[in-house]
Image (cartoon, rainbow, N blue to C red; front, side, top):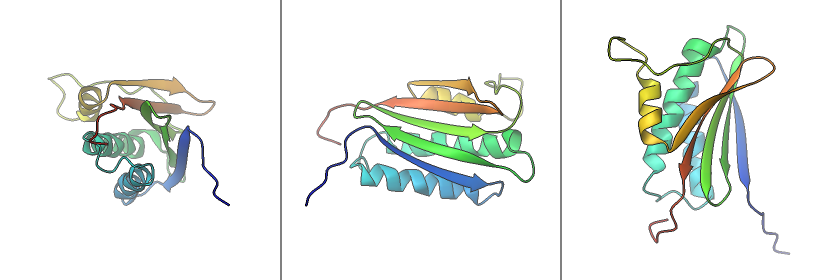
Length: 138
């Protein structure tokens, strides 16, 4: 019996507050793209960079000790959406030129088509989206 899974596709993975979580989140995203047939997509590396930046921000600013973060990768055929859910307070902001650090969201803003911050009961969701082109490169 051949069963086809219908769009949208979604994969979730929880990560502990540990520095190894960032490369693990990046690998999880790579596996997801491969599974969905997007491994050769021209924006796959942009997605990986954004996952790294959002996961790093969650660990540095959004995950209190003893907690972790959730990475959600969702693909509906037209848009790939990355979400990082954490339990921290505050709203992330894009750094300005005077800031010495905090350039991660500048990268996310430059590489993705859209990004934003949503509320959760405890914490926030920082997300970014990438439009999927229907070129033969996919």
